[in-house]
Each structure stands twice: as C-alpha cells, then as structure tokens.
Image 1 (cartoon, rainbow, N blue to C red):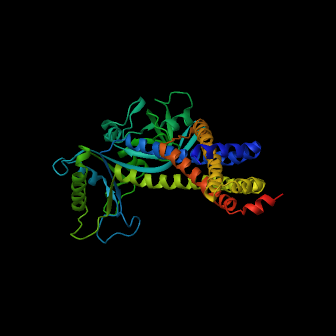
Image 2 (image 1 turned 90 degrees about the vertical axis):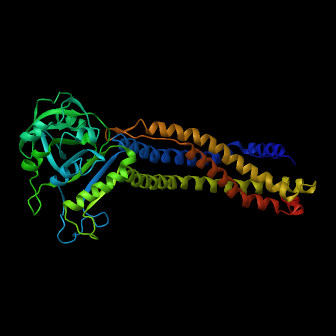
Image 3 (image 1 turned 180 degrees about the vertical axis):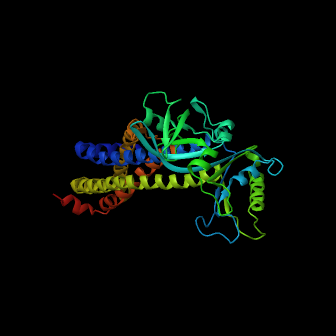
Length: 416
C-alpha cells in the first residue's frame, strides 16, 4: 500500500470523530506553544545580555582584587589585599604596558541619593574621565567627569537615566543638587539610557569623581595607606593584543605587589570573552530549564495521543478484522495507526509554532517592572519543537498501533 493511501486512510479515520481529534491536537498545540514561547524568553535574555556587553567593546580587560580561585579567602602573607590607585597608574604607563591604551580605575559603594522628597538607594561609582570611553558611557545631557573635577575633588555627579527619572521626573536635572550620604552634589550630566533593571545597570547608578569618592565618600585605605580600588578597567590597543596585554598587566601587578616567583596572583584578570562565556552558560541553563518545564505539556499531549489511539483501536476492531480478512498484513495495520498519531502530532506542531510565535511577540510587549522582556525565536527552537512533537506522536502511537496489528482477525470480526 502506498504512502498516499496510508495518509488518506489516516485522515479518514481521524475525521470520524472530529471533536475528539481536535481536542487531542489542542494538547500538542499547547505543549509546542509553551516550549517555543518560554525558550524564546531564554534566548532573548541571552541576546540582550550579549549585545549590552559587546556594546562596551571586545578589547577590554577587567581586573578585580583577590585570587581567581579563592576570592574572599585570606591571601598569602605579604601580598596586597586589594587593588590600589598606584596599580592603575602603573598600568597606564606606556613603557610598562605598551598594549594598553586607556586605564579607568573605579571605586563603588551603595548609598541613598536624595533630591527633594524623592530618594533612591543605588550604586555610586567613583571614576576618572577615561571611564566614559573605556565603558562606552556617553552623556545624553550635560557633561561627564573631567580632569578639573578630579583634581579639585569636586562635589559633582552624573546620574544614570533611571535615577534621573526617579529623582526628577520630567524636569531637567542638570544644574540641580542631590544629597549623597548627607553631602550636597551638583548634577552636571545624565548618562545615555542603556536599558536594564538591576543595580549593575548603567541606568541605575550615579557617577562621581574618583578622588571625591576616595577622600569624601569612601575613604577606606589599605594597611599601607594606599587608596583601595574596586575594579580597574583596561582598554587594549586591539582585540588581537588581548593575550599580550594580559601578560603585561600580570607582570606589572605582580611587581607592584612584590609577589615572589611561584606565589599565586592576588588579583583576577578577566576579559569580555570570559564574561560572555560565563553568561552564555548561565542563560543556556535557564533556556534548558524553561524548555524542560514547557516540555511537560508536550508529554501530557503525547499521553493524550496514546489514550485517544487506544480508544480508536477499540472502536475500530471490526474494521481491523475485515481488513485482515481481505489480506491486510500486520505492517499495514501498524503503519495506518502510526500515521494517524503522526498526523495528530504534526498538525498540532504546526499550529503550535504559530501560537508560540504569537505568544513570544505578546510577551515582548508586556512591561515588567517598567521594562519589556526581549524574546528571540531561532530556527533551532522551531526545529527542536517540531522534531520532539513528531517523535512524541510516533512514540505514544507505537503501543496502540502494535495492539491493533496483533489483533486476531477472527476475534476482531466477532467483536461487537
């Protein structure tokens, strides 16, 4: 019997009870739509995070205090427990780090920022003028921190876009004053909006001169009296010089910290590539988790297919007996019922793709905490959903099909 005949028989068998077949297809539609929409959320989050990090450039190194494997654990005796401003100045020396173009040390802490009757608890970042270029953080209004502000330890600040909206609404904040730790700061600029809702988003922070942070707001020093630095941002000449720059940075910092040969580094050097790799791993786990949760719906839909096909085999016992009596073989009966279950899952998958695409677009328009969620549907998500759907249809259709194929024709003809 040709495949076309099997398909026609399959459609004819399913059309006997259209409502039942439709409800079975609906179970698959819900499962496929859930898989596609939830996985699109995970992929969208990954794409959004990747684009934000890459917007800063691919030629950056970030230096943090503490050993890579023992962050927060007591370091070897005699080594500096933190990065210092002197370390940043040493890295900015072109004779010692020729592969480095710009160095932007920063000091950070969390404080309450008050403007009139409004206030917000957010991250305060003490930076140098180089930060604007190194971290790609231009101002939308006003100006950024300058060398003049740095030398004078000026009480000025640049607000993130969300902080500016929270404190001043639609009023232009440039030229107005805010209080940080009960100290008056004059607003000289507002950063361009980057998007994001966490404390670590550029929109949710306030930038002040590094010297102001060190001497007026966060005066902590090391035991040797040096100014502590939270992070040193380093811009490399080009992406192909990243490894060379890392070697130069490591050599300079080891010399600065008087580390003997064989002693472990008391600092950690990471790059954009390292950060992206870690984030990809995290978002992949999230995507798989969301897909697995949605996959339960597909499993339930598959069980629905098995249930309906078992009922169908019971209802069509006499038909099976007649077909066997006129010469139909076991494989003919087996293929007929397998194709029927495959048809149910295939059409459920097609409709589910359309519904899932629509749901992902809808999710992308719903504001959550003032932000819209980005969703991305990639071909591999659709291919995965369709493949799993067809496999589920075949897997859960095998038992009913074998049961139909094993029926004794005489017993089947006697069935009432």
